Length: 186
Image 1 (cartoon, one colour):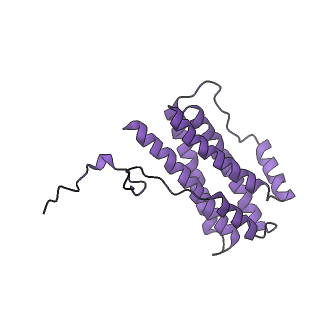
Image 2 (cartoon, rainbow, N blue to C red):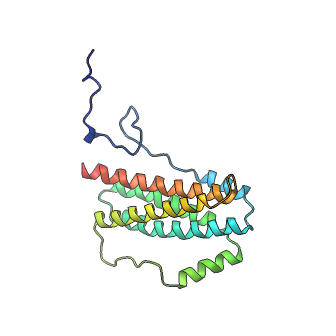
Image 3 (cartoon, one colour):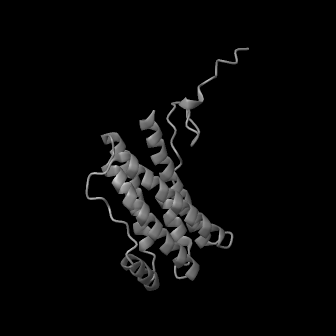
């Protein structure tokens, strides 16, 4: 029995996702059609839904700003395209959710936007590593925030399902960026 036949050094493995036979792991990505299905099945006028939708839009917009910076600072065209697809997906998710906000939800968004909490982007061409680190941190914070909202909602409620979906969405974007960092660090 040859026990060394399946041996592979640990530093050659990513621990974020399962490896396929081709050796290129791909994290699961939440589907925007599933988001649309959640939106369609929800009572969009309910206070819990509006609260989660506002938090989701704010969190996704913050993540989107950072993902755009990562795409601009990409080290290769392939990396720029991969991260650009994340940006497009996040942008579509924001649009879908923003369209469901009530007048009160839009008012909350406007108050938040005018409170001066938005982060300013560096005017200079940013270096990839610090921009990536900032994006990973924002995605982790957003995942934690949406996870907290998930546990605060009744089991099976549309608001809970929406917050769970957004947490998974942010986690999948985090994993893609982390794998990009892993690929370029090797």
